[in-house]
Length: 473
Image 1 (cartoon, rainbow, N blue to C red):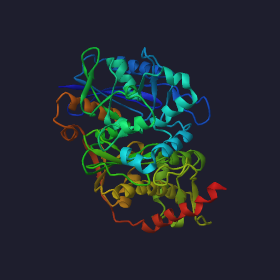
Image 2 (image 1 turned 135 degrees about the horizontal axis):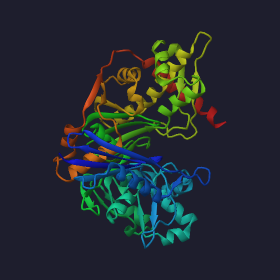
Image 3 (image 1 turned 180 degrees about the vertical axis):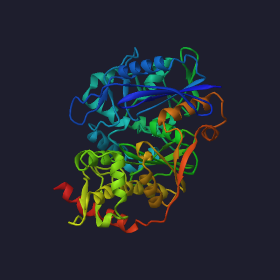
Image 4 (image 1 turned 90 degrees about the vertical axis):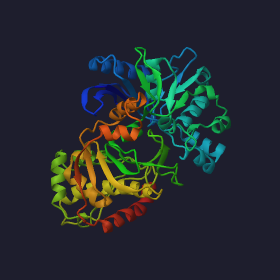
């Protein structure tokens, strides 16, 4: 039985897992590493810490000769290497916000419409291109030393194989990638006077792009969301993945590189050879955790859900806006703020609990509706991450999305999908679709009960517009 290794370079730590070709989980390991915030709005890590964590995980799994390795990790980060392939400075991460002026520079230089036509996305502070421009604008000597720029997971590829490579799903989030053509944009590199030799060779995600020093093939892999989608089977039209983590992600595969004109959703190359559309709300499980810690007196999530079930659909007029850290989709508004509205003396904590679950779910529906607007079909929702354990929440999503929701036997996130991509790269399956059919198994299915929340959703949508000006006072 073939064994496949998946490695995920996350923000708080790395994870490695070993599966067989049926998708059975054999071993797993994880390691934490620090995050540095040297200035407000900055976010950095030492790439050597990633490698130390990976070495620890590999030692614990102790499988020197898997059939293949797949890589995944946090997207958008920038690792700068010099002529000796040494790290020039700490990596600048996806959640770093220092590049507002560089995003404006990108808009001025290229123009929003031209940029969207090439990258299918607006310039965002988290993307790699603004970080490169920031380095040139603010740390010129470090920029002049730089000879190669890698994404986080691809730095680990280099340490494993000695090769500089990337793949299409992660490269799509750099701001320098021609997403429809699935290649680096020489046009954008020329516009910003960037040497194409700074960037690694790019392959498809399911291609074995290099070999580890022990001769084990290493697949291209994927950005964390694309790899996670492989791990949930969201690789064909009609299957939508909804991740209920700290942030909320609504993700589906699409056959053409369609994009949302306002840039509220992302359109990237998918790891299956197609493209994907993705909406990200910033406070999903994070909003529920805030409610638990500040209002629910430390009640467990199960207790909060049980309270919520005591209230009628619509929370008898109470509405919760989950914008506790601003919002990306659908509003792309960093100044958006959370709120409870519609309270009266008859309301109990159960009404507040229900309103929190409903408000977060309405935010996810906003993302889903934008994806539907790109022509995506919605036949089945695959619910993953911590929130998938809540029967109440999964039923709420099924009613709200008007589609069946399923949970999975193995919900191990991006590392699981990366391992599957490794198997495709060595021919265990002919393509990613067949690989998912063989390895991704559903646990439970929840169908809509027909409970309508349309009036509550309308109230939710109107409340954001009413509070928008308050947040700017």
